[in-house]
Length: 160
Ligand SMILES: Nc1ncnc2c1ncn2[C@@H]1O[C@H](COP(=O)(O)OP(=O)(O)O)[C@@H](O)[C@H]1O
Ligand SMILES: [Mg+2]
Image (cartoon, rainbow, N blue to C red; front, side):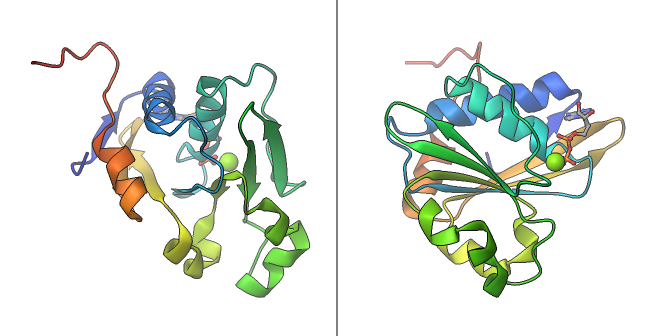
């Protein structure tokens, strides 16, 4: 998945997120996925579809005001995090950062705290592309790179 992926509509963003969800381990506790991109690029759409693909059935409210929204799964808790209002790493403790480390972290606006890249597994970079969007996925850790490399889109025939 080194090439930019063209996402013509929101369903394509959701489908990509579901494909990433299937590439994560049964226990994704401790994983960190960065969702980069400007306002409207599709970060929340991606996060919502990922959480649904992992099995969450309710709503997925925006963490814009709460900063963190937790989701319980059988093997771990996922945290949907929005760092838009955070200005530096020092401020991460405002959202109880150290308590989130055992979970799967889906982080919108990770650009606010560039140091996060060092401890992250996967970076999803979303951008506008005409009326649609484009995405680039990059593994930042060994396990993250392996997960990205193993992503198999739906309806794709895998030749033997
Ligand atoms: N690939 C896409 N093509 C067109 N519109 C999209 C695409 N992905 C998401 N959208 C739409 O873009 C809008 C903003 O998405 P959102 O996920 O809220 O962005 P962000 O969280 O990055 O601000 C939503 O209306 C969503 O349906
Ligand atoms: Mg958003």
